[in-house]
Image 1 (cartoon, one colour):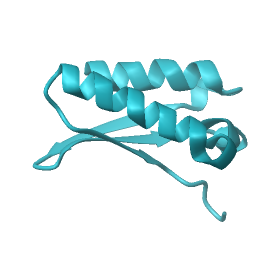
Image 2 (cartoon, rainbow, N blue to C red):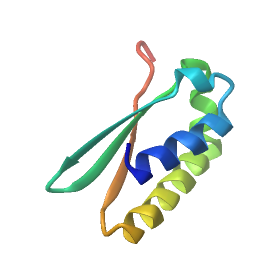
Image 3 (cartoon, rainbow, N blue to C red):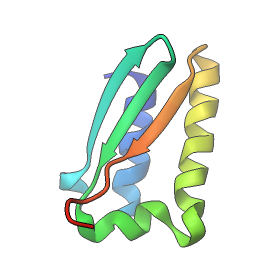
Image 4 (cartoon, helix red, strand yellow):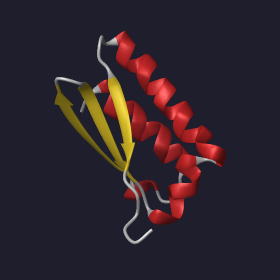
Length: 83
């Protein structure tokens, strides 16, 4: 597991009520690193935050981690089915 993936997993598990449901997938392509986050549907609000501020903050932190390792890191949050 890479630093950015571990970092994201650690942060998200601290924010949610169901840490065992947190899944982070990592893909690397010519655009950089894409981390896809899946959480329990009940925890979506915790991850997005008011007006998306929590998700924005997580993205900013991931960019900093990426810069430290010369990588462009993007975050995609999987929407729960049926929403």
